[in-house]
Length: 380
Image 1 (cartoon, rainbow, N blue to C red):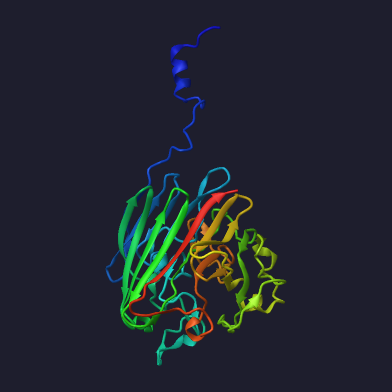
Image 2: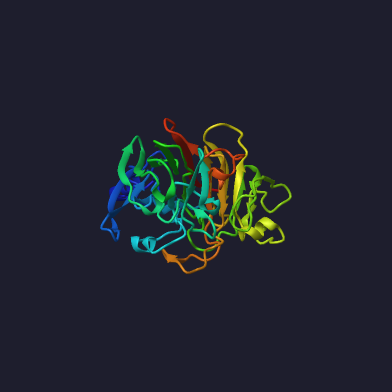
């Protein structure tokens, strides 16, 4: 047999002709970087942090509102694409948006008529959603600058955000010290840890309001297949305030106990709850099969194969399908039209301060509020 020329043999040996591939165990180095993201009208500076794991997955977070501006996830061919709604620059966030990627507080979701009574004292909040208070008020946690600290250790990169909400800020009692930690690992999981303490009894319900679109922002989410470990929802009136009773999902468009396309029931307006929500904008009660951090929901885009698993320590999730998006906002090359994104807002029930039969959202001095939610991405 004739010997190959030395150079050709060497090239093949070094894998330049594709005969040698990197081991699956070889990974990039996880990194975190920081850049300017612009300036607020009052002169405060916003920064943008880019978290990159060993697989090349990236998550962009700004210390303005703790907003996740970008998150990339792999498809079945290993190609990464952005899967969250948002903008590439600060001005559109300052101009008003439906909480894209935002860190929501003090109280995520709605409080009826912006009023509640706590330890015999009445409190009044800003009305910013029909007749109700929504997502912390006119200037909630999504509209403030957070103190940021970078994390980079043990193959995990992250961002720690801290903010102190002053007593009676947006009408809520108590000086509330809040710490939120985002971490990205090599399992393609973004974990969000929320902790808080107060010097006066208050109410708290923190969540993240990312709108996911696993197509890579190519089309709406109606073909997404969703599963939720839940036997019941919290039904609402026409202003989206809970009626106070639970409703079984069996035999209704709200049954996602098996993977089901969003389109299967979202337009069944003969169902009063679909009509009231304009689609899905309801709180599902998680059926706990284990304590602590539990896998309770999955989302899949059949065409790309992108698959998201959602874990939480919380008792419920607000599943929202972008019913109020109207195409007036655009970003990252996409028009955010109706049902272009879906939210999995892990939380306590809406209006809990006015509904004593619901799990309590009260936080007292000496106690620590602590919850965790994880979003893990893969492809099938």
